[in-house]
Image 1: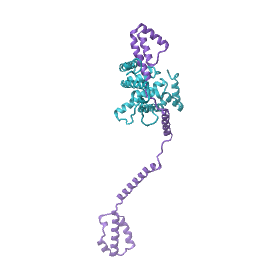
Image 2: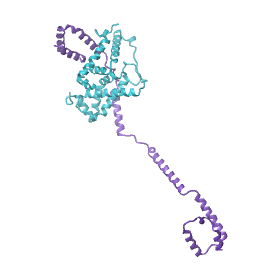
Image 3: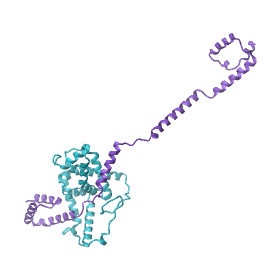
Image 4: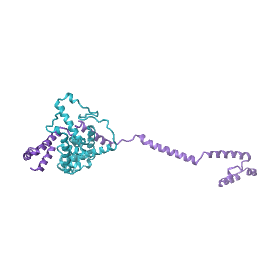
Length: 169
Length: 202
């Protein structure tokens, strides 16, 4: 046996005790190379210490059960995903509808501003003034009136034409 | 050993097909070896056990990707090592002190902190000496660089070949043996007073 074989036996001994045939080969080598005995004794001593000391603390007795429990929880979560409650589904939609309604109302307010009511109020007042001055016109005049109503608006149409009223009387 | 001759690979293929009993069998068989791998890198028993459980959970999630190109144990130990290294890197980026770090050496039954029995008061003297010797060995191993500790830890398991160890570590066979040799040389120097008989003599 040469040094390479001695090294190989050493590497085997790092992992497990030598078998009887391996032990015999080792002893034969050491008889021919006694200077290697001290090195072998040190290696054997260390192997004994390492064998007696645990590589790691023991795992807890419920280790496997805890692993299986986690796996089962994961599978249950996949098979039955948690559904959101009805409120969780409706609340965002109601909020969206409310916002849309508010925007529509705001738009309507902008298109039909509150000042139009003042215009209708002043129009009633003007009719009252006119009715105080002039009688109700005849049918022909009323027919013309409708035509006049359909004319495009001008600045003067907003105000009662007192001169015209006087002329009609 | 390929998948055709590896019984654990056959079990893992059953896990891949959804066999829960096969999965439980693998967990039961490899829980301590995986714990040993993880503990070489994270020297806290509770955290190492939590991480060991994560390893098996990762195995479950990765079952659909398992292929019998390598021995099952090699694949498993590689996952264990990579997961632990990732955890170590994550902690370096976000350091946080573990408030539950507990003393070593006592088996954990529940979530409560481990407690160490007063061995010096109640145990026979030989047992006390033996426990102190084991603590010396534990300290010496803990002081080794991580890659040497991991290589030595896998070697000490006895049924992991040097070829497998080199695959797990991602280095050559000669580099693996070199790591183990250097680890042992360091331990021999540090534990010299105890080497002759394996018994501590004060």
